Image 1 (cartoon, helix red, strand yellow):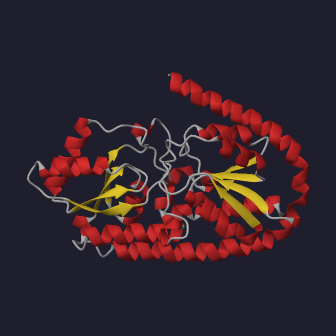
Image 2 (cartoon, rainbow, N blue to C red; image 1 turned 90 degrees about the vertical axis):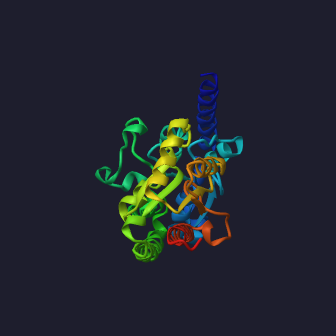
Image 3 (tube, rainbow, N blue to C red; image 1 turned 60 degrees about the horizontal axis):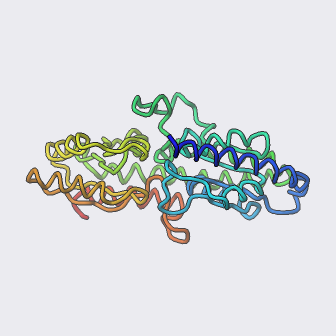
Amino acid sequence: MKRVAIIKSLFVLGCFVLSACTSAGAAEMDDLAGRPIRAVATTGMVADVVRNVGGKRVQVTQLMGAGVDPHLYKPSERNVIALAEADVVFYSGLHLEAQMGKVFEKMRGIVRAVAVTDAIDRARLSSPPAFEGNYDPHVWFDVALWMKTVAIVQKALSELDPAHANLYQQNASDYLAQLQDLDQYVRTQAARVPEDKRVLITAHDAFSYFGRSYGFQVRGLQGISTAAEAGAGDMQSLADFIVQRQIPAIFVESSVPLRTIEAVKAAVQARGFDVQIGGELFSDAMGTPGTPEGTYLGMVKHNIDTIVKALLGNS
């Protein structure tokens, strides 16, 4: 409880700092047509949409880098300063950023704060009972769903900088074409795996939308949020499932400690079955900037290629 109180105090302090800083910088908003927009994005996936739609007109500061778990992320003083200096803040929403989401909601009267998932029809979202009445936030694993975020980014940038609205519209159109090709690529790759072998087991339950869209049964050791610890019963149940289904490979995640999946592998081996670790998947964070996996397109391609290769026994 003490830890929660300290974190809440930090968020409240951040809002006061934001209020003071943005009031002083409000006059600069009139100069947007003559300078790049200063945008802050939380995760790599959100930042990638903003970069593609904004192009050279937008300077993007990304808060959470490679390997960072947004479920557990705590804002630093540098984050508060970046947020205070931003013209617009883009975040995923759907409780992905946990407590930071409350800060963004409070900021809406101070700095323009946009939840990119607001464009997604709630009827298309999953709301598992274990997630305490909230929606599963991992929508980027369904490329067709993630495409909905492009329109809301385009709209926000166009309203902020109407002089370049045509540019944002063209950039959005070009990016949507790439995402459409990406969605088809994932479907083609997934179809290579026989239906009875399409079982994806990872460290936490982040791939539900992926499974629903591309025909995989998905199991995670931890829940939707990595803040929830897996118990001994969860471990034993998952190990029994792997042995029963004779699943050839399970996967680690870049933003979740390796030990969780290594423990599953050991529990399976204790039952006389050898399951392989099929590779590392990017789940809540993309890869290192400058690498193919440091983009949304490259991350998704890496994931599906790694999954297909391992489940077909080519790892």
